[in-house]
Each structure stands twice: as structure tokens, then as C-alpha cells.
Length: 448
Image (cartoon, rainbow, N blue to C red; front, side, top):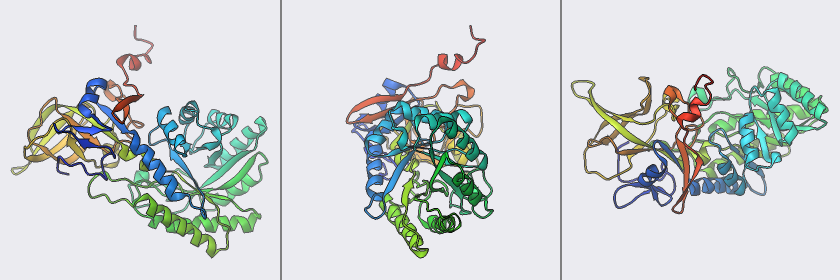
């Protein structure tokens, strides 16, 4: 991860470039000018990148033989403007809380094109979803099935549902984002019989209509191998349901989880290749048991927005630290940190970082980009090479921060959350404004 004038196109946003002064530009605007206007730290999204990824997914997955709904996983990053962009491009929206549902609704997303996830949806959340006409609710427990059935009956509607099942498949990813093995909170196990019990319960409820099955094997997945076992088991379950209950599910949702490149060593599969592989796997498994090919659904989140954004920080201090007799590590402290990007601390995530505000011929030195919080684990980029002449006031850009950074942010140490802006064709707009100290203190009734 050597700092370079070159920006690796598989890591940086589509329109990322450098101008004659060495400043990184996105959408035709320099990060320096954007920080001058909106402050630092700053999330900068490339609108063209997001729209292009949405179009790629629609083109790759929708074929005459295998029609597929594309649900954008809003948990990756959600604002009303981004939701509008994705709906304009033909995507649907996947939400997992009442708050995310409210954002989608206020963006004008049609309720019937919304899918509602969650392992512990509250009664008010389910009531809202049924009331507005959410298209699909993914049920995650027997308790939820009974709860939802009663709510739908009271409201006099028939609610369409998918049953989320756990397949016993472990994706090759971090334990915290691997979601299909047995020992975790999501879904109903096929192996234990819980999935069949849930399906039987749904089928017995007049106010519920079973559309199909849902599975998700994890996140930051680089190949289709995990889907082979997953498809085998979910199609086997669908066939069992057909034989046991004389009912044929018409939809299989295989979740999301497709990865992006954060560092040069990352080599994610192209969306077209992944789509072709998943289609072939599902088709083969259905043919094996003579099961009618169902409609498919996928839920990309990170793959749409992850690479579309960078975070720009201003350097506050540079501290050379003698680690061994042969190693000096430069600690580069910036004006954000774990409050705007918890992923390094939480998942040992790796990122690519570059000097963003100027060019330099200085030698690259061993560096660590750290935040300003009162935690030794407050690290943004753990191990990297950066120019030896970095100084206070310089700007650093961290690539690949479009997914799960701003949504997982906090106000630790009473630090207001950064602004989020988007750029396109030399123009910028605010997606989420910067928080102020008044925003934070407004929650404290003891403040005079």
C-alpha cells in the first residue's frame, strides 16, 4: 500500500483522478475545495459510480431465463437522495429497521418494492410495515411469524413473507460478518428442523402468504463457491416443502455479500461473472430435483456504494515512534477516527490511503493513520507507507469507505458526525449535513 500519484481504479471511485497540483479529484472537484466548503472529516460519494454499479447489477442478473429482483441493502449507506438514485436506476430497497424504512418511504420509494429484514423486529415496526404495504417481510423466528400474523389479521391484509433459513454454510470472511453457519442469531436452521417448522406455521396462517425462502452466507465474498452448497441446500428445502406441504415456493432470495477491493491484493469477482455463476448453480440444482425455476432476488449493498466513497481527513500531528532498533513508525493523527470508521477496530479491516492535497517526491515511510479518540485501538489504517514529509494541514483520503462507515458512526468523545456529500460533473450536494455541538447537546435536558 505505497502512496502513489496513481489511483488504482479497482479501489478508488470511478471518477477519481489527480489534477496538475496532485490533488485528488472526484467528479471533477478537488477534495481540497470540497473540504474548504464542507469541512473535515468529509465523506465524498461519486454519484456516477453508484448509478453505474446499479446498472451493472440490473444488466448482469436480469436475463430472460432467470428474472431477478435487485434489492439495495440500505444498511450499507442510506439517505433519501441515494435511495432516489437507486430507484431511478431500477433497484428495489432492502431495510432492516423502522428507521431505514422511514428513510425509504420519505424518499418516495414504493412500499411494494421494499423488503424488510431483521432478527428482532418490534411490534411497532411490523405494524408500520404492514400498514404502508411493504412488499416482503423476511420472517426470522416462530415468535415473529405469530406476531406478524396477528398484526396482519387485525389490519385485514394478507402479508407476503419470505422465511430466512440458515444453511450451515460458512463464507470465507470475518466471523462477525459470516451469517449462514448454525451458531448465530439470524434465520431458522434447516439441519435442526426449525426452518420446516417455520414454513409450516406460515402456511397455517390465513393472514400470511409464503412467497419463498431467503438465505445469506456472509459479506465481502470474492467468489461463488459458497453459493454452490447454499443453493443445493435451499433448493433441497424447497423441494421438501413441495412434497411435504404440497406447496411450491416461487422465489429464492440468495442475499448479498459480494465484496469490493479495499487494497491492491483484493480480487473480487466481477458482477457479471458472479451473476452467471449463481444463475447456473440455481438452474442446475432446480433441474436436478425437477423443481420449477423460481424468481431470484439478490441484495447488493457494499458492492453498490462501498467503492463509491472516500473519507478525507486533515492531519493534526505527525509523531515518529521508535518501535525497534530498526523500525520507526510514523503515527499520523487525523481529525476523525473510530467514530466515523469503526471497521478497522471491529473487523481488522484494511484500507488504502493516499496524500490527497498535493504532490510530493518524498520517500515513503512506515506509517499508521490514527484518530483523535481516547483509545489506543483508534486506528483508521493500521499499516501503510506514506510520504515522509507529511505535515499538519495536509489532507489524507481513505478509499472504500462508502459502506458501513457513516452508518456505523458514533459520537464517541462527543465528536459530531462528519458531513456526507456527493459529486457529479463538477457539482456537489449535501447528502447528510455535518452534525453540530448543538445537535449533540439537544439531547441533554440539563443543558441550559
